[in-house]
Image (tube, rainbow, N blue to C red; front, side, top):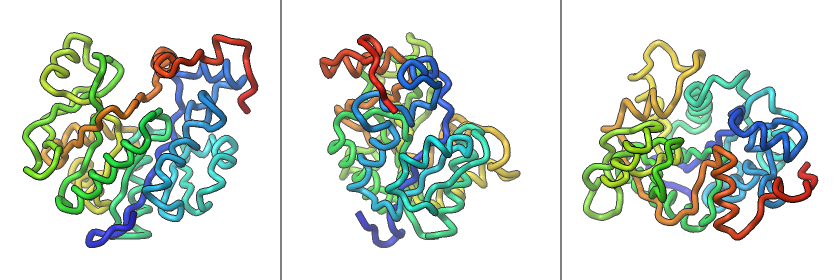
Length: 287
């Protein structure tokens, strides 16, 4: 999906996390506590490989960057054979989501200063892939019309999950589309607060974003003028949470989305598909 005006659309896939919350499960599946994005939990494709497959109709591999942790090179590179080697960005260590994103955006700005970027976590599960891609396309089209703003993909909650961040939507961005200004973020609220947020139309923050690379970096410089690449900071709380007036959210309907952050979340996905998790049956080799 080529773009005009504000530049080509690139993808940035985030695969630098350590996945500590699921290490017990990934050890059970693979014999070692590997980060979940490299684990084949469902089928013969890892979450990272599935993410790349999911976004391939949106962005060509030549315009897809993947940021990984240098310590995970041996795990990552065999799963990134379809990505040009120069598009695999290895950060020295995991400093939370902020530094890895900023360094990657800086590299993308160097390659294509007018680029628009769609940012995707590599460790989430999405059942309705075509619907997901249509939502990202809507976000990209809206950024074309509102280049000063960053688009977020919000997910309709089906329960008051306390492990997610929530987006509080405001008025419509414009009359022509189902997109809303962002009032505030609520990171991992209590169950009671989450229920209140949902009743007011709150959405889960999927961390899927689309925006002009130059605009991302401009806002980062405003928030962190003393540098943003060398110390740990969280992109959701320390950036998105501080610039809601520059954001808008597109609700994703019936995406079958989960961040698979806990074994219970994974088991809910399996149950919805009528499947029994492999760790409840004689173990199979996953590689």
